[in-house]
Length: 388
Picture 1: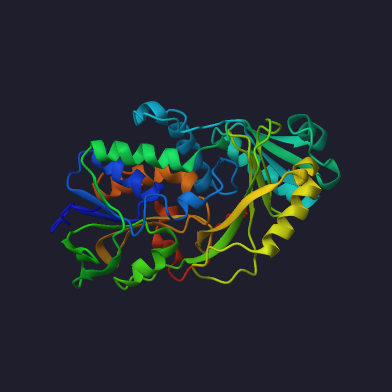
Picture 2: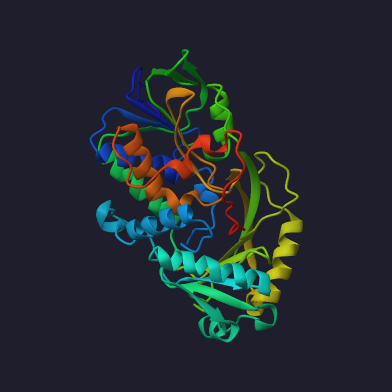
């Protein structure tokens, strides 16, 4: 920010002011941590948060993701009041309808629902006829069956992050936007300072919440983080009268599609041939493939006009589950990365758990499945397959 002197010392430096960084800052400050600064090379939500599909779901294939998502949804349900936000976070809980396109997928989804139910998530298996009752314009000819969870939904990433940001500011957190981190100092055992284009700040704690640039931040302290970034594209249509409550998502058909509270449809997909990197452009190929897919699955939506399209980064981990925690390699260096496209919806628990670790408290949840060390010469124990 202009006219604000850059600090020479901080107790905690957080790199990245997306929703994860803002949640971490808020949770630390709420628990009494002082002298926290957040560094952001552009504006708040300028990275993956501001480019995400805005969905919030609890229907996952792994226990860790299910629990993180369930507890995050419980926070979102009360976030307006908890954060004393002066706006509207626009949390719309009208469910996620997850489409199974074949028997193999249906069998996996039945297992997923058993897991989800065992953890208190109210998902259920539907026939395609029952799915049609929830979304009448669904083309059941390309549907085998489905699952549905009524407490999943849609949340505005800009207002939700703003709520965290303002709450953190009230608790004394300082944010420095348009500030680029150029390096991190360390000695043999611990971090000692962060260099930026505005100056150097001495600190004993650095949090890597840099999203698509998490690997590069790790490299600044010689910590190898096994993640990479890739572009996933999204488009949004003109707004129309409400016609769809839940998000409709199909992993095998490579689509998610949600009508926002303002009436526009937002939809996205991945591309397995997308090169690794930081490109966030959007292509004619994406527009063509998305148009064909949505017209096949949800025919009336194919009639709508596209307003704009864009790309955003998924920071992918080997098992498609997040890396949350410190590292044995370097004292004072913490990570919140590798969310594989789902950091937005897991942000409440990311902030709580990482703040507890930093402050030396007993974590609310077991952290072994989120630790960086789970990849040390080991085979992937559990792969999250519910990713578009």
